[in-house]
Length: 594
Image (cartoon, rainbow, N blue to C red):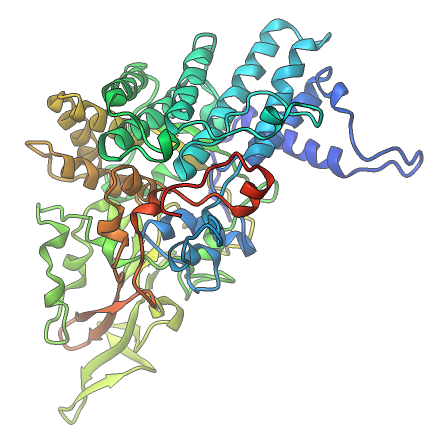
């Protein structure tokens, strides 16, 4: 049974176009034995074919990584950023931090070299204008749409590699060598290209909203411009120039990039078309429903999913053991990120010292976790979280005093706890790694999660991020009052105490909490140039819970969540260029440190 979503006609059309593309790509006439492809020359004379062509480009965008067996790679960026890991080390996301990065080993699972999409986009841009069928308005609409997708593709590459070849026309085999084997543009040139492209298409984009339905619009364009400009500003502010400018941003450009992020964020805010989701009085329920009540006014741009037609496997992978999921418990949350979540009474998340997590102390679980930021409770399963009418268990054993007055530790069987059946220990999958699990974005109404049958949309841009971008840019431009107000809007929505002053640390913590597990933290730690603090020489932690039946409290101790220390040297701010790419194009210089 699935919660009904706020569907609309645009969403259905996009999904239909994806189906059409599949049909066009796979069919073969059994009567005429005609070739199983459609000529590219015909595509831009028929709107259905053009929409299918563009749908294929959308489908290839790296909005979220759904690769790997059963889409296990959707945990890729959170694993790299030490938010949650995957259940087992054979799963590719765990190799983002376990592998060594060298020129010989290449960029590994974080790689993205999006020139197939770039070629398809460039081909459309060079040919759609020659259509004898389409009117100028339609051509402009489609041109703007794919130029956004090209800018997004370059953004995904520049955050990984710094400068990359800037290719804006289709390459042909008879082109001169300097065209076929382009050198890398500088990182600054790529960001400036992204900025110029987005600014240019904004001029002719209409005011209509289609982003929540998965179609690029003016506001998705503003959101990408806001994000990309903020990234460039941060790299110039905190990073260094390397490899003759192939990586790095000139310090003299920093204020202009911050200003662009500030301006575009402000335009989104003042449009009046977007707001923080605030439909429910219960702050935990409200933050939970933000990601399930699709099409709400916080969503700026989404990748659209629908069960059966185009679903994903989040519920099947992430539902805790003990419920009706065929896989389950796949994204163990690291205690390191839990400590970023403060308490509703004003205590810091780090006020609980790790030194106190010993067998000599016991804790009220409802204070230890239940009184934290409601965004935590909406994002992470912890002991005795409620789910689908039951409790989620994470304890490895139960201590109790038997009839002989002896203190006993049990790992099997059940007990009576105030009239309810209490298992002596949880399902071992729940306790195996960190004894905490990802909850954010899961659909509780999906009672029997099946692989590929979840339909929650993935929010590429939402208004919460816009406020965070605005606050950060405003802070570095000296507009501290505006920064404070933006941060407090998020804290007020979450039910957290408002801040009376703003700081760099407060902005960064708020961003990690608000956007936790949404594939931001890894890139944020990199652009702020503080990744080694969290990712180098760090042995991330999980927890061990043992329940005390006599006191209704938990003994909580730390354990190593990963088999080795994480490594993040300064060279890892950029991925290495694959040697196979350099062999194909000797004009590609390697990134510094490799």
